[in-house]
Each structure stands twice: as structure tokens, then as C-alpha cells.
Image 1 (cartoon, rainbow, N blue to C red):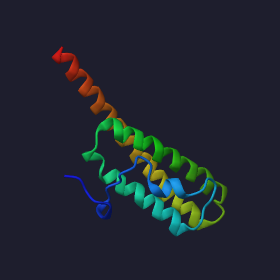
Image 2: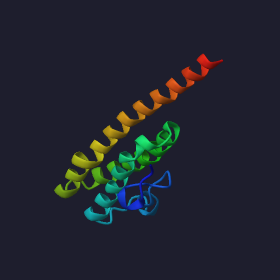
Image 3: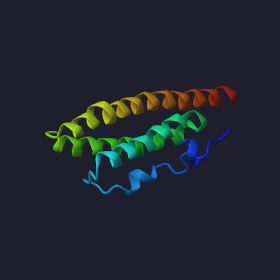
Image 4: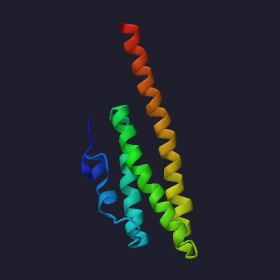
Length: 118
């Protein structure tokens, strides 16, 4: 069963928010948090997707989170941005790492299954 956009289904490997936010721009805390929310919604749906597709999605979103981390570090003197980086973006990067490991293992298991069928 696939979700809908209202419940978190993302139909493109790169979240719309990640495509629209200009490199280097930190519009507002709300805009950055909205982008993070889109990525979190995509993570919730990973279990329904093929592992290789999840890995591509993680690649795109992880790159965007790294970009956000760099830009947030540049404005770290402002407490609100530091909290977004440490309490949200870095946690999301940790989750991407965990998900990538899980899904890469699924790809390997499928490869092994195919080898056994030969």
C-alpha cells in the first residue's frame, strides 16, 4: 500500500523542498524545518520502497543535509541556527547513515539470493 502526499509519500527521489531551496540560502528557521519535515516524511516511507531507490534518495537528501550543516555552521553565533543544526540536521544525517546501511544490506541479500538460484 502506498501513501499519499498528505501522509508522507514522496514521488520524486529529491524532495521538492530540497530542489527549491537555493544553495547557501537560509530563508528562515521555519523554511529549513519544513524542508527537514519533508525529509523525515520520506524516511517514514522507506520501508515501502526498493532498497536501491532508498539508497539514491538518501544520497540526495544526505547531500542536502550536509549543505545545510555547512551553512548553519556559518551562522552558528545565532543560537536558533545552532539548535537546528545539532538537534535536527545532524540527527537526520545519523538516521540516513543507519537507513543506508540497512538498505545496502538488503541489496546484498537480494544479490546472494540470486546467486543461490543459479
